[in-house]
Image 1 (cartoon, rainbow, N blue to C red):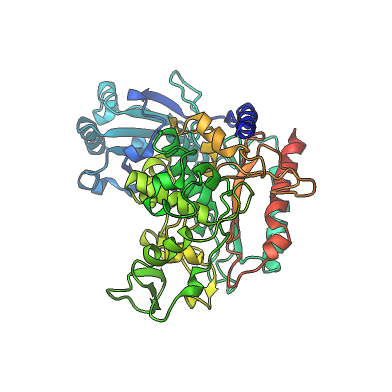
Image 2 (cartoon, rainbow, N blue to C red):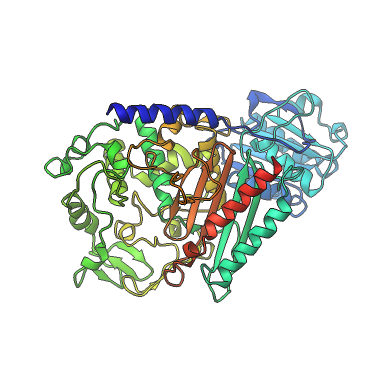
Length: 576
């Protein structure tokens, strides 16, 4: 125990030395903030805002709208729809020039301000005079915020949108703000050779697709809070019917462990709802009389509980357990036209996990059962389904718009990248249903798998971790909580609590030849990864569907993920 405390203490010191986030704004932001009642700009916890965007021309201001949508869900209206359509929105963002806005439109905006809505007027162009529209400076001051930018081009619109959400700090004028969120400036004025880096990444991605390691992929890199690379490659399938887009949603597989379950565990731990040194038997009634009763949660998170690595539950199905149509006794949908017997997880899977053999505690053995356990603990303590809890404490607040479970309930299937053509268990192409068989049989929500997301949402999460718990001007976790979970916490492995980490063994080159001991993150079986590097203030994300149409090892054999990460590191190091 003393040795483990020593390891944790040293790791926290190291993490604290390299984890203080440093946003680096390298572009000139000409946006000015003329008024900012209650310091609304930059917008903070996004679950507090229901945002309507109103413009005289959505086509003209599409770059502005597109950039706003990188941060939050917004609904776009024209002024003909304004009064009735915006009634249930508490924040109105208006974009236009003085000549494009009419007296009646400004009067409606003033009325919205009287109705206690946040009205953010984003005025483009050099004509700031509204007096000819019978609007006085005193009336303008009723608006929550007045944003002005002299130019009207695409970049000016994007910078204005980023300024509203804190993607860019406002540095001109008397009212100034700081960057609080990801900045999308395509690496403008960066000291890195991003063109050469992009060409090298393009070549590796092409190799992966040509070698059929995966039909498509999305690569994203964030340095110092700036998105320096973001690109989609290939197609959803080898038939090339649908091009991969950066906004596509992927099955994250085991990234679910660190981006779905672990954020909930971190929250419960720092709120003293759970104690990592308490046991499974303390939290779970069904575990009290099993061989797992005295196993601590800390041991579970470190994969040192001696659990069986994997149980192929789908191979144990009996005739009648799974059928092609839904009825009263088969309500658990595991794929298109595939329905599992009700309560199969509660009646069969969970008891089998609880009664499975346990090897001696303390040795590192990676096991999916660990996160099944942490989901059960979390739900028993919160009385809330884990998929809802993580949305409420984090995703909705931070602006992770797509991240979540059961994506077919929320998004069009064509936006979700398909995974395997399952010819054994579900006998159909999996699209929007979790690839992992056990997670599917558990209803699509499990501690170890089931999370879907875009690269952008993962980048938001990664930046929050780099910021040691803060994002968008709001602190979601204490710095010491982030440090504890993401630093090395084991005497027998490289692992943190839930998080995987850089492997220091010579020749391991995991996750990259050029990674360092501050790096943490996770990979996913479907061909995904996220790695956070506090020392270099870097977030690296790779998403693919390497299991389509069938599971292939080529992505790993060709070291596609790690080679792209190497290129990013080489670019950073050359700039130094």
